[in-house]
Amino acid sequence: MPISVTEYLGISKSNFDRTGAFDSLLDIDSRLFIDPFLLKDTSAVQLSDSYEKIRGHFEKVIKVLSNSKSKMDVFYKAADVMLMFPEVAGLCIGYSKDGTGGSGMGAVLRKNLLGTAKEIIDAGIKDPEIFELVGLFEEGIGVDRISDMVARIIREGLYSYTDAVLKSLEIKNKKVKFVKVGKEFRIPLNPFNGKPIILVPRDVLKDLPIALDWSDIDRVSFVNRELRRRFNEEIGATWKDATNKMSKREFREYLLSNPELIKDLIQSYKKKKGERYDFFGDPAGQVVWHRAAKESAARFPLRLLLSTTPSEKEFYEVINAICKRFKQLIEDKGLNKLLYHNKKPKHEEAAQLLFYGIADAYCVTNDLDISRESNGGRGPVDFKISHGYKLKVTVEAKLTTNNQLIHGYEKQLPIYKKSEDAKRGIYLVIDVGKSKWKIKNLLKLQERALSLGEKCPDIIIVDGTLKPSASKA
Image 1 (cartoon, rainbow, N blue to C red):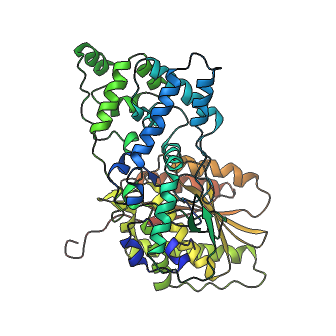
Image 2: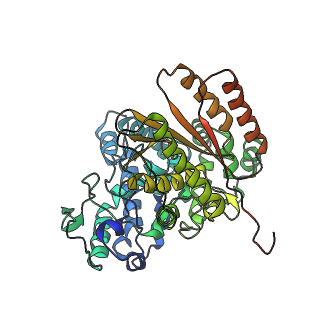
Image 3: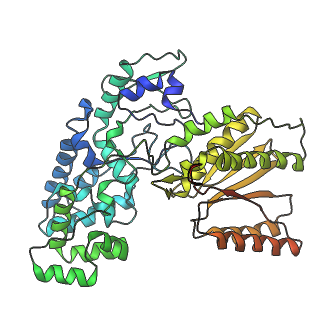
């Protein structure tokens, strides 16, 4: 079972939460990010000057690039060095394919960013906020890269914050190892990767930074009426229209050919209101699953009998029992509520994480190993549960809101058909409503494969729809 900071350090959860720090998981990244915009108003005194540090750093980059005449001169090379942002290891937030590792800013991305920044500066735009907005129009730069840039610039403040928070609490686990980082900060080591455990205030975290979320942006407000008319005709009425209609490359070229648009973009960004992540409602499904999975597994234990040398069939039945228990917890024990935010289905990853937490709790008590496989994008796409070397079962957890639900199953069929070993798998489909036809077609697909004598993943349908309360039923 994934371990949180408080669990590992032996700290009271309620006391820790009062510090305002995020209780991250040590062996799996939470898909939350440091939003530079939110640093303006953080309650963490150790980070009170962080936003000005970020602005100051990029003001220096702009000043150096302004003096550059070619990509070979000392100014351009100096700016290149200033845009090196290796990942700050130990945050346990962001994207990673496995565990809690990241990639930082590579040479190719830095080269592209430098070129774009130079063009914008040469167009007469020298607002440092442009570096917070590069994720809108620069390929390969998203929320994780922006968070990496920010964390690298303010890392001393993060070290200081971590040190201060932990000093205010009593660490009961005597086995915790510490390391010195920065100038004088004593920080515990993550037992899973040996890296420092760096705490982040909850009030600077978001699932999507403001700079990349234009869902509530006002209509563009150009002084030049002709420019606004053309923008409306070609793009739409809002910046959200622009980012939805164009690829990042196209959007970049459009902005560079119309510097006035960049100026308006920056002004619109500055006027936006900062919104912190809702840790109680957990709209991205990144927080509540961990505790809910632990509590559910404890309240509803599952006794699994597995012999010393189990057969493939015996092992499969154990995994099937875990999936059936997950189905029961969703359908009858109220865990379906964790799949929604404001009565709308959360992202599929919320369901995947919940299954992972519950399955892992049962696997631990039965000496089984569960591992997540990630597509490197947003969340785990499936799980492999194994016992020893030979026995393995793959479980794919999907919501009916997934547009690739049927196609995903179709992709599995030829793999199973060609497999010479006794490959077994489960396609765990969680129904969150309005997709009965998908389930019907999916079952038809399975029935057709079975009628031809072909191997295919088993399908387990979980009713995850919200039910009316007893008084309204």
